[in-house]
Amino acid sequence: MKKVLALFSLELVFLSSCAIGPLVSHETARTVGKSNHELIGGYGDAGYAFKWNYGLNDNLDFGLHLESLSIGLRAKYAFINNKEGWSFATALGTGSSLGGSHYYGDIVGSYLVGSWEPYGTIRLVHVTTDPLELKDTDTGQINFVVASSEYNYGQFMIGTRYWLNQNWLLSVEASSLFTGSSDFNISKGIIAGAALGYRY
Figure (tube, rainbow, N blue to C red):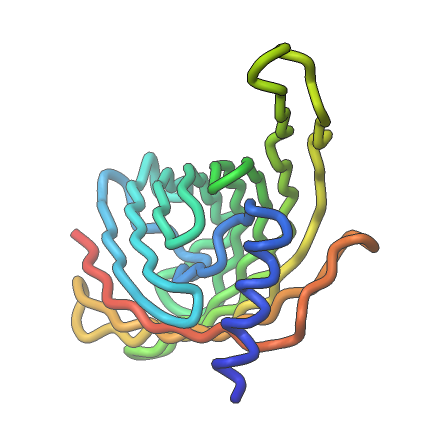
């Protein structure tokens, strides 16, 4: 039932706005490390998701995301970046989806103990949908214009990585959306998914 509610809420968001930001994370606060790469592919209630991250230095990653409803760029900076124990980071991203564009900010915390690395993320997203103009084909006069629309929403994410070894990881994640605009409603529901990753 929860899966049906989550899919229904995603459909409502997509149909009402035709633009949405990324819906999954599968990332901890720790960075991938200088000159290292990380590839992640997953699937869940939000559809498919693929991510690539590259370590610009020990505390700063640059990456790309491709999801069922969006594509974009991302940068993550870890201000506490421990090989074990607590790590904290912030991230900024921007991109586009059908009918518009988005930008967002994340606050991420994670804790590595043994092979387990649970994490939590708070994400705030701003979406701008493209304006639409319909014209009469004979006269060229504008029949009507739909002005550019903007809205905000947020997302709480919790998940964990399980490190199979130093390179391979499994990730499971669940999240919930909340609205930041009075004229934009989101049905309650949980978005869940899993992913497999490789760091090298």
